[in-house]
Length: 206
Length: 344
Image 1 (cartoon, rainbow over the protein chains, first blue to last red):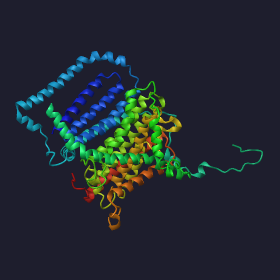
Image 2 (image 1 turned 45 degrees about the vertical axis):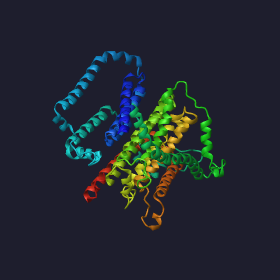
Image 3 (image 1 turned 180 degrees about the vertical axis):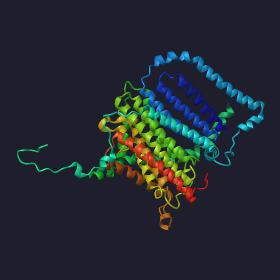
Image 4 (image 1 turned 135 degrees about the vertical axis):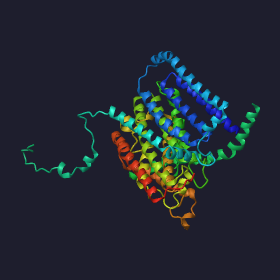
């Protein structure tokens, strides 16, 4: 138990620390790297809670794919750090407001649990406990059996958004030469090579 | 506070120290030796496929060559370029190398012979292998050099692309197993190794593994002919050495994954008397060695891909193929009622 507690405080402190560094680091690439560290500590907290599937998915999806693209974009863009800094003061009130709203919502939720314990019963996991089945299976039951239509609808929306993004940005440039491998493979010797008898002294007439 | 420290000490002595550290050493030390000798193995295989002799001077048959190379790298000076981002520059090779090692925590060598028999072992492996892109991209960016940065960008795009098809291959295997646990995956192959019913997926996995580890014919991140040495062009001495070791460690890991997912792990090829006398870990070792040899065989045989061809192969060939095979597998399993019962 005490081991778990030590690990919890370690992960939580590191998550908060790296979260602070994300917004305060001078270099945007460092910010993204700290964001990755924050994701990692989040995954560690998930493991401590016994949600190992979520932890792994967090690492695979967010760290392994999304953050790579983040890093890509931040490295490629030539960002003026000073300009970025100067804007921070302007957005500070809005940011604070969002933070306060989130905090208030959390307070309401926990206060609600404290005032009306029955509410907490609703919030409890609607699937069997960790001891009965693994959380991978519990999540699978929820997503693919009980809420399959909602899940499919979400998937369709994402697919449409993805296709939309491709359609909006795809432009076919005329005049660029593209490799068509099927065409190359379908070429026959007869259509490409001709053996010509060259008469002496006159050369080939075209 | 005293309680806490006493508790921590108790935890350390009772749970961490005696068995876990020994277990980790039992895996990590042979692994490091294997990585060192994989470089020797590679040079020998390449040499014999090109009708040369390979390293044969240091020690009998050149067997001490890896140690000579390692010693040379250790004794050289580590140079940090003046424009480099120092911390990230130093951290990148460490990340690459440690990621190549930590993945071994979940590799089972026999029933119960595994450091951490976790429920989501295969996802853990996938997560770790998808992280190895960070070592490369951080190295390329921190070097503050055009060649290194181009290599890093190529590598990031390449690894993200091939991870997609690796993911689908893993899902196909999981459908046939019904568990994410690596031991369960091996035990599900008692009757038939997955390489037989899922042969196209095994091929996709192996080729994607080549791309994921940045090996020939997909070694564009370090393509000598156009990028000098790609992402590690600015690295010297042991910081380069860690990249090198990490790459070979990843290759051995990929071979182990291929063996476990498709070649039946520690199971003997025929479950009959003379074959079952050989202990399981030896079978696994033999399979890993075979796949490792295939990595080198491919390098000795094929020329390097062009970058657009590499992307085309990943997105336009492997992705549709693996997606199709995934749906096909699911359909066949459902139609025949072979969907595995929940193992976990």
